[in-house]
Length: 282
Length: 261
Image (cartoon, rainbow over the protein chains, first blue to last red):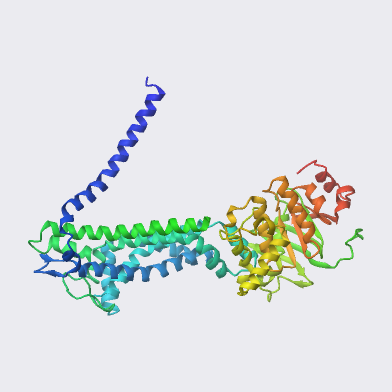
């Protein structure tokens, strides 16, 4: 029979191996991207439009396009998502209507992203006549992100102790004053963290924007929300499937930039959360 | 009701309940409670857990309204006006009838912002006015000397006893007439409890206080009148001294002498 000590060691050993195995893919993906893509990251690559059917030049319009889409997604999803969560947690009583909303949110979270793309095309591009545009893309990505934002915001609000709400109400505050001055400030770091992670995810989506906002090539930068744009994920998709003779280096370079943008957003999320937590404790 | 004897009998009724019944989802939590609350006195509500004393307290500032499924019958009066009338805004009522909860619940803000919270939501914006209110409230709650050098530090860094006095100062800052306290000392150590009881004594001259307590020595020490609750009914109400020395009803005596509860 194995001794207790040995069992303990074997157990920890097994867990360590499993943990290591979980880390391997992440590290190797990032490592491989940097290995191949790094040499492509020249000043020209980052600041110039593509040339010669995307086989040369840079990806500047795609970087700007992705950033514009991300900002648009934030403008659509954040107010709508946080508003819904506040309504559900702070105002509504459990009834048929709120159950319906919750079921809708859960189902929305399970819809494949390509379906959002098709919906966006039918609804925003065609029916509302926005055309293939930044606006249509941002609305589509916004709806895609909504379920994540609503559910993280809901959790964040529920995590605020009721004793704060009671204290505020007992001082003669209205519900809105209570939400605005006590509950939201406490919940905001978690809400923003969840929202940024969700939006970071959306920034990397291809399917929702391929019918609604993105084009394979335009040297122009968008100057209104009705313009179509290049976008990094779609650019990646295009150069790896539709355009012949693009160097592997350029594709990996673009992928690296996309990863960096999403990574930077996640970093911002972490910084916001840490800062606001510290501020409250001081 | 027979004539009560005691130093505060002449005080007028600041609040009063008449035949108050409260139902919570089909369960009757309060049965026919009629109780006067004399101005500038401390009224203690005692009784075993689940007897309805905290529920009763929350009917006095309509905090039960926040809980789904509660329904009320009978009258609750403040200065002879019913506080459950259609025209009464609970938000306005709660400014007059403040509440201190069982566990200290300062907001996760600075000490200053905690106290200024009430005045701010009621529309005070001027810095001078706020400074004055904050200082006066903290002085009245016997906390000023301990915190005056750290007003802009987080209130969460205070001890439990200091937090509870901070919460009282926060209530005083909205200038209430009545202060409800729901077992305010149950989470405090004996020294903090003694300070709190001293404070309650001082506050009595300017405010009307109702305190729910599990601790009968505390009720005897701080209150002028005592009401004994059991299973949702108010069994006996009298001058505190009488309740603790010569209760008229057997069940009161049994509870006070520790035979049950």
